[in-house]
Length: 356
Image (cartoon, rainbow, N blue to C red; front, side):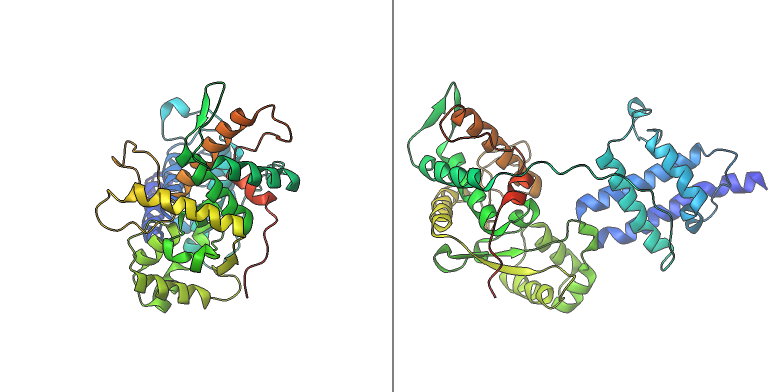
């Protein structure tokens, strides 16, 4: 009987992998990678399952109380890493929260309607936000620095293109409170007349909660179109974009929201400056590039500048600019160092409510 149980373990892990394959089309690419990571962790856990605990024979048994407790003990102890050199290293709190969230997603698919035990992972204390007065100083200083004049101090410099993009990016965040994923999803046609408004496609922080199948059905498009639209990857025709927008707007409370925000006059000026820089960057690219925020330099994946920034690229662009700006402005009257994460800036933004 014991031999039968041990042989059945890997079958349960394979069943979880099949569940992940079924979920992959309805979640963001990053969440799909995380789910596959947890499926691999289950396979490694079953390979070192303690004899004192009943070995799960079916996928549903993986989400029983004792099985989950055992899995979590192995995961929290750093025993389920894929690479041998990492085994024994305790996972960070952020990693454990990802694993916990993925367990909840998998449990909902494997055991629908059933309550399962999930571990509690302490949330970190929020980092301090930018004081409102500092935001005003930031806005004024960046507006001054977005001219053609070079800005350099102690060997640290910000190019004109970097300054113009950073000003526009920061100004839009201050007016809308947009997250990096929402900034990456912005397209040129999200800007209103004379850059007086901008449309923000609000997405839950848990990308797996996006009802992409529902949106696709309502919009009459494929799920891949919805995924490209929500992730800001582009490749969606104007007609399909409008269909997806209408479907998102019809989801009501609890679903992704499409909101229009008024931009301050200074933000409009900053965005128009950026659009002129952007036009030069995308001019050499083949095909159309509709992303509002694009790269300034070539990288190892894209041999030319002007390609759409992904959420991670948006965060890096802000961080790089903020670090350089802090170096340039260090010691100047009225300037306090900026936080180097976009999320801290966003949480400090006192943006107005969306337009009715």
